[in-house]
Image (cartoon, rainbow, N blue to C red; front, side, top):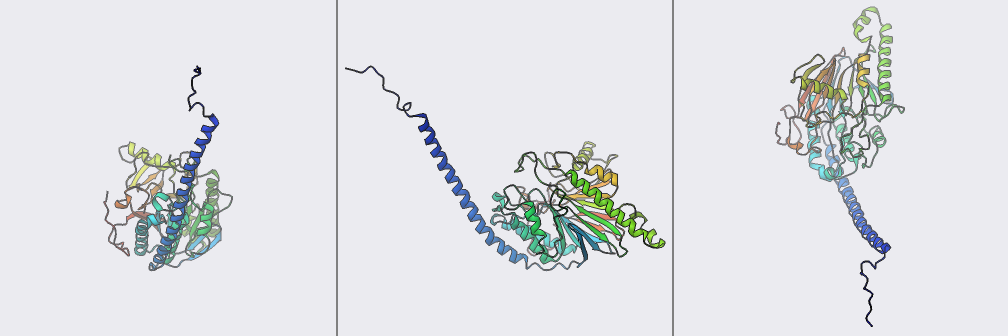
Length: 435
């Protein structure tokens, strides 16, 4: 007798939990392969990075001493230094050196070391301040996750040059995927292994690592100028990898620390002046009110954007608030990639009347300087050969900022391009386009 029951579809006969189990097995196989590839990549890059770094450090140690002055210095608190000089001070600002420290970046790292060493050797500064992104541990460009590799390369060749230096952190110095945290890197720089490195973590009750102050003090005990160096942090609002360009601002307790620091320095000067004879005290009448200061940080204050917007919307002509000093805005899009929130640092600077100049980095193709409401807002010239696509072949943005501090604390500054005859590197300069 022929059955009238239709045969069931074989696919429908497979239990639902069986399909789920099969899908899970496939997913686990794919995940296993992916993890194996990641582990293999990390292992290979770690070995290659160690080999490269050992070789690079040996070369860095062979860089000749630049003949910079051995200063009389005093560390009076965590992150606080006095440099003693009656002749003023010569300071170089470098920014965005971007040492990858890995096997993939070895050639471009060598170019960056070449450039910095050549400039320091020619200029012979008393002090170097690096405004962030010294290291660049982005694996698909550097070939490593190890952010201490680039930092160690920087520290080794700076020590070989024999120049006093410090830095503030940028967003790339400690990425979310980097091996070492900001606290780890602060401990590395301040370990004492590099006697010319003045970096210290700064006050523990203030946000960030590396909030510092360096004073220029003359033989009468007067502070002629102070350099205030701040950690401008990294990414915010869930943008852990920085792909949305959501950058942080200075925090409220940093602004409060800045204010109390300026007030304390000014009070110290007043106390010293009051103990001098009338004739000597008269020389320091301009320094007995408030100590002149310069600020250094990585991510620009929002006022950089305000100033540039006002200047550009006025047909690139001065306004009542904005005066053009020099330079160009080479970045596209937002032009100024400042923090996305507001802080009251600039308003505090205006109210205190101490800070007359701010120096930042971060936007590699910007090298302009504008005076905004009486305060000079200046981009340093970047060194970067690695981060921006094609930037190793461009030259207009590469160099340093030279700050000359007079004996009375007055400041003058200028940008200085690397591709000048006065800068002679150990190996020939690369060919670039002066865009």
